[in-house]
Image 1 (cartoon, one colour):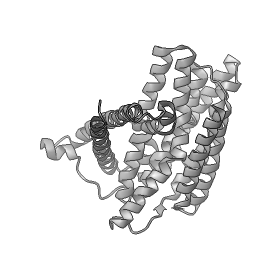
Image 2 (image 1 turned 90 degrees about the vertical axis):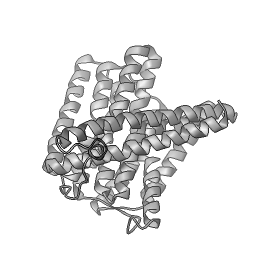
Image 3 (image 1 turned 180 degrees about the vertical axis):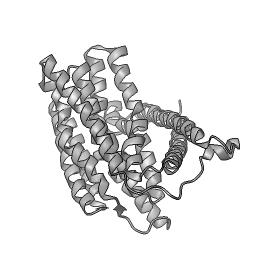
Image 4 (image 1 turned 60 degrees about the vertical axis):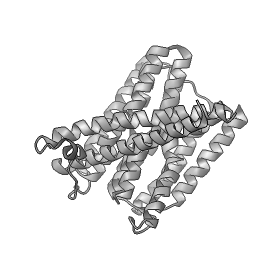
Length: 334
């Protein structure tokens, strides 16, 4: 494969992820508007359940097809890497498009204006995320099962809380894009569900295509594949929710954009640690511990901003600093 082929693959991957993101956000907005569901609930509950499916599949495949220590490491890496990437590198990515939107005249400023309801998922995530370390610390089977059950119940209570504080209802939603292509005037709600599922598949294909192209580029350019993988490849797992957040930012739906990111993180502080307790023998490393500390610090700063209902670019700067510092640590420990 030549460099031109790599560039073409990356371009196709980018096109697919943005197309999937447009279809996905449009479908969720339509379903939310028709069902009279608030922005916060759509972003924090519905969107993450869809976009976390690729990671859940990777987690299950790693455990049951690969098995052994290596399979468990892949599963653990998937669970711990996602909140870290969302807390660090995704915010600079998001604010980059906030700036682009401002320059294009789509947005009025470079600040994310969010609803106060987002304090619920952020407080919950910040309080519970350290439980990601529990599978490595608890050996008693009865205690493991009890803690896992409590984490799952916590997520169910969180869903109820977000439903009770779901925010403003979307009034200016568009028809599902597929209805214009197919020409259907009825059953648009079912079509929106189909569109969301199709969009998720497109997002997964596009993100995986970019990862494959990046790995090929590492060989062609004689760049250390491991180094490139550590720095770039984890971004692929957060592309679906990142792209949907970017599109919502460009549509001035800031609450939905930020909710989509934190909603994913709540899953990784409740459901996934519960699965880890039930299914794996977690290994606690210094790198894992540091990643949790970085995520916690950034989350507390974000909480401060949400209380003020304004996320400013310093969140992006802090996230980038945390990402770079962690990469330096990883290479230092290697």
